[in-house]
Amino acid sequence: MSPRIGPRIGIVGASGYSGILAARILAAHPSCELACATSDRWAGESVRARAGADTTLTFVTHEEAFAAGLDAVLLATSAEVSITLAPRFLAQGVKVVDLSGAFRLRDAQAYPRWYRFDHAAPELLSKSHYGLPELFPGKVDALVANPGCYATAAILSLAPLARAGLLDLDAPLIVDGKSGVTGAGRQAKDEYSFVEVDDDVRAYKLHAHQHTPEMSQAIGDVAGRGVSLTFAAHLIPVRRGLLCTSYVRPRVGVTTAALRTCLEEAYRDAPFVEVVHPHEVRLASVVGTNVCRVGVLAPDLAIPDIHDSSSNDAPVVVVVAALDNLIKGAAGQAVQNLNRLLGFAESTGLDRLFRSTP
Image (cartoon, rainbow, N blue to C red; front, side, top):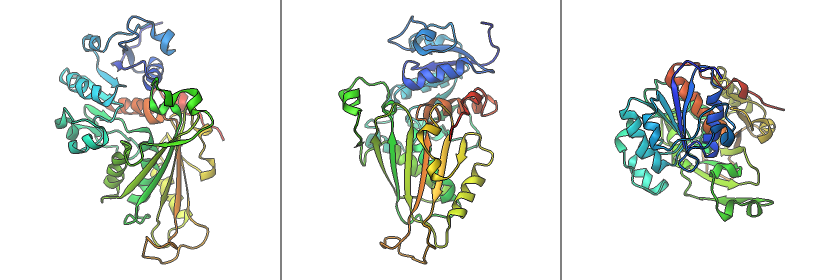
């Protein structure tokens, strides 16, 4: 294998599902060199054998990554671990894309409630860029917070409509999310075993899911005002894929055509967002790709002039979004952000993941 010329990239936590996929993508990246992949439990073992990545690397420990001469690193670690590692890499001049929630929220006081820990590096929260490229394309410096999987689907489907003034934001936004088992990461717990998950669906983390404030923060930023949002997550018996169905009140006179046109205009130049009919938003159409499919539908009848959004007669718009929780919801989006950090085209190295099926 001939050596590639380009920035040296490391993946810390390359033994988790997202880290494995990131290793596969970066090993084939045309403009970067996968220079380091860490796993404390797989240290010394072949990355090709364990992760299926096209590389001769062997796994090293997390600590050894600091001596690898990296230009950028993807942290596929828990939030608590990322908080300790990111400042050290940044101090070395290494650019960081963090896949955890460690730097997604601006308010350090929100972390005890939603993440169950006190933030140990609050000074970095104001320096972190929220890495949803389609909606937050601003200057990316050194630290990118990769969005959560549920949050990516919900924000991509709702934020353009909120920004355009098509939604009644005085009414609550309701987001119903369903994800495959890999969304929980690589955990050896009874509740994620085959016999516990198969032929079952269950809700979890009600009023406690850490993606909830992330959704509210991002949609509010795009809309220019605060929003009230309720999110309910569900575990479904599939390996990969995530679908969010949102129920929102429209402004008076809003039609399906206006809603769809808004989404189409927002994502006209976005290679990884497809606007389709809601019935075409399916897990099978996105798994294995870096694509998020979005669809929207208003009631067939004309929306009446109802100003009381709490009324039982008030209409409801349904917005649906689906993505692969490990790619567009994690590793693929991280590579999008890495490309932006390094000055490459956003889709570099992700072209082979454009597949979508009817």
